[in-house]
Length: 185
Image (tube, rainbow, N blue to C red; front, side):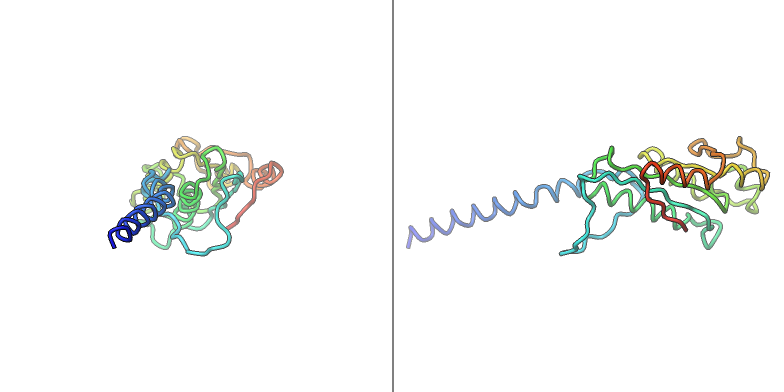
């Protein structure tokens, strides 16, 4: 009986060691800080077939046109892009393999707070903190220069994280020619 208990204890210890070993990378991954700390990450789905692949380089350009439903809400499209970026990181895609560009062409959520307040009935720009956090994480922000001209928006009213391009159409074509996938919206 004593030999059986000893074998059981050894087997149990080996099983626990194996389980800890297998869960180590997952635990380390969840303990890692996300690149965009205040943004969500996609919920894991056990048995999911398509997952972010750390060996791929994700080159994705997103269009942001529509405003949030309410002027004092963060744009849901920006939240979705941040979630995508965090999900890549949480699944082991290294920073140098996460190349994400946001192209603004619509509601001017890219304005600094003073300009946003002036054009949105005195409301603060709720998108600034997320845009700054996303930029710090490595996401690029572009705005259509033709739209700025058409709306008479001065460059000095933009957030410093946003670069002005000649035309959103040119930006999209150039990025696609460089291998980016374009996701409109």
